[in-house]
Image (cartoon, rainbow, N blue to C red):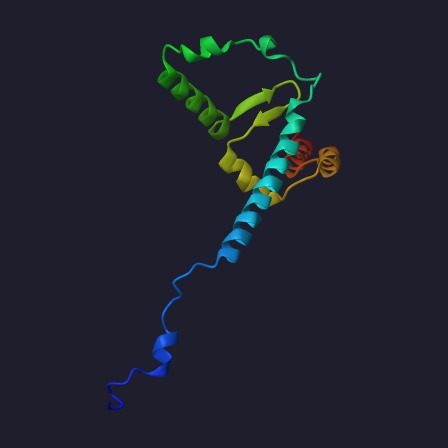
Amino acid sequence: MTDAARPSEGASRAHEPNTANVRGIWWTTAGLLIALAVVSLGVWYLLGGYRAEHPDVPPPTAYPQSAESMLHWESPNADLRRYHQRQHGLLHEYAWQDRASGVVRVPIERAMDLVVRQGWQTRREADTAAARPTEWEAASRVESEVTP
């Protein structure tokens, strides 16, 4: 027999074994079962807090609408459209929040522009800034003092 017809010695070692690693399968199964038990216990522990009674939360019967009335909307598309229009108005239109105290709602784009230009004020900074006249108030005082 020539060398070309003879199988090489490495060829017998190159194939995959016919048997499965039973010990590895058992360890993997045991590990998965332990992980499942740990996760299940964790979820059971976390959800236990939701079963506790909370006296500050009103019972479901105290809510103004029942579930049946919410399921029987006559025009859910129109309600959703009105809701989106109302939200759009809150975000994109000027309006008085409290006219007596001078609180105005500003469109979101304008508010972001003002924050970028002037910076974000804390409550303490806003209180001290309110005590000082603004540039517009100072200019109007100067004009009123100049004009007879």
